[in-house]
Image (cartoon, rainbow over all chains, first blue to last red):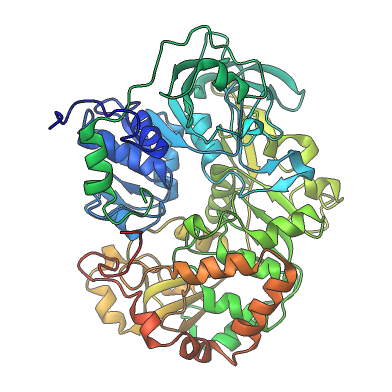
Length: 269
Length: 324
């Protein structure tokens, strides 16, 4: 019998499991976390069951620090409010976000670029394919101290690009409107600057941002090489800083995902 | 009027004119006034101007039915039941609808300014993003920022150097819809409104609007709601019309009462991949039934019962949701 804290071996976990667990490890104990629907919910819940028992989860619909006993399927799901400290509304939680109270946010997107700018509005710009639009994506990326983006990548290099075709959410370098000059985010946000994208977690690796705000490969998931990660980007990805392989899910984390957090098989099918 | 009128759904929706600006209570696929959406479509409203904190199944239906001239919001989709609003996406891609994209805080602030009687509110959100790119000011490009429409500001937004700390901030103009339609769990016979569960942005959008229609699961004696005023959301004088219509939020969810009907929404999303698909769907579920009662009969009691919430939890404890 393997120890619960031991790391699973290739073949004992699915790509989705690694995504959820790598994302969960971004949370530090005591942090205030904004999470969206799907994998982000699993990630914060895994973190709360492991290294971050006092982390607080806020959903943008207005529930704060819920203790769901059944997995919610949207941020406004009645399950989010179960045993919550507060269940009010958007003005409350977006106000808290804007005033700098959110440490970490998890989000998704259709396209991400070298600077961590995110697109979930139009693939190919305003004449392209229409998606959902921002929702809270732009607000949360604008105003959280750190944001973590969870994205599919393998075989989808058009999602990892030098410049997104529409900036829904700001990364480390953005245009200053209305003069269009590309400048560091801090210069645009001034006193409202709280931080920016900390990591992009894909099904191939974990990416972070350097001193210039440019994406680099931090760890590569088992089964892939840094070169394969670069080949699955549409820009020249920096792989020189790669530290090695991403830690696989522990047996405890796998047990949490399938037996405790999503026993119904809603996301962890 | 200090007290709302209790009317039929047909009568309430009949007050809304073509070209009016509308907003709705609720959030994505939760607590949306769906019976009112079906009735707006049945009454063939045209050229509506939607301004919504976020959209969902309801606004994609209105768009698919050709009721909407201008869509302004931060989002349109069906949560896990459908990736995006296909009707809206198709009309945007074909240039058949005018739209403005906003961040969530932008549009929330627009309605909050409206609710507070202010001309604008500031926010730091989404600076450097393409919804603020002057090239994406679609109403401006259509020549509609000329002051002729009271619902369309002279500017989409303004960057402003605020005078207290000299920071740059985004000013977004107030929105004051002609109508807000909200589904709630309970209204008193004098119009006091109680919402159970999350309030989302209901108080802001209701107070921003000139007229309000409340669709309620139940009308209860005022005395019952006034025993616990801290649980109530609105006084009756803010409400113009009350319609009593149980299950009126189906297929969206209603906290403590019923789940969203995910299968129904997923089927709708599949149908809406083409305009013909939407038209057939609307023929079956909107035009093919006389009214909301007939719609409920068509759904059948066992389908509705399968969505019913457990009162201790606020959601269903028996519904099959996943693969296990």
